[in-house]
Amino acid sequence: MSPSAQPAHPPVAASAPSPPDRARAAPRRGQGVIWMPFVVGALVLAAIWLTFFHSPREAQMGEVYRIFYFHVPSAIITLLLFFTCSLMSVGYLVMRRMRGFGPLAQAADRLAGAMGEIGVLFGIIVLVTGPIWAKPAWGAYWTWEPRLTLTLLTVFLFIGYLTLRGYAAGDETGRRLSAGIATIGAPATYLIHIAVEKWGGNHPTVITGNGGGLAHPDMVTTFVVSLIAIFTLVGYLVFLRYQHHKLRDETEGLFLELSELEDERR
Image (tube, rainbow, N blue to C red):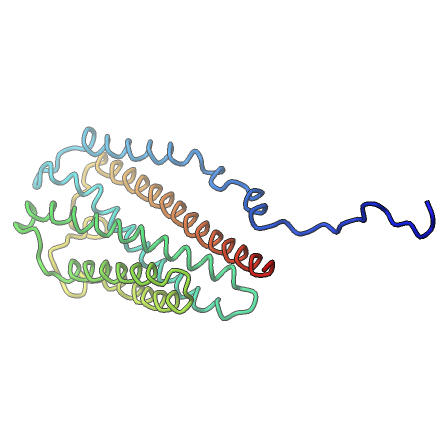
């Protein structure tokens, strides 16, 4: 070969993987929690069995009292979800302005959205199961007492939050506005918690006061198992919704990158 001869195939610099390549190379999500549906199902079945076949009949309210084992844990987890959604929204609004905290701010926003969705779901469960219990206990399906009214308004508040968030989609301004609405949920949940103590109402203080209701040890066992079952179910549902939001954001990012690549080739 003469000194001036050039190699037939010059070396080509390795290029960065394209967005589809990165998508195919990404590890499958959820592999580490594939066992969670079985755990959640077992706990829910155990709670149902204890509620209807193990826990004794309540002396005053009879069989309708059994709804207590689903109503009260649902109310507790609803308040926790709304409160945490508010905290995550505050975190998103703060961190989005801080350099280097962009990914963490996005994660907080996704978690707030997931908690808001599941919080509204269980808030509706509370508003449905409450009147079923209230009719034989109070003689009316609904009374406009402070706790009931505040709970209804808070559920509507977070429905508005989710509506605005869904309408905004990937728009940054819409996300900021919806996060601002969610921040109102923190004081709202606190007011729900203290409503009976401050302003009265029909709600008994079954767990923390002298309202009765957990006099028998089997009732305590049933309530604890139901509480664990609902908390585990909610944790799994929040995880699934968070993964959904994360996958949607990443998919939108891939489409944007593909559009930029097509624009560069033109």
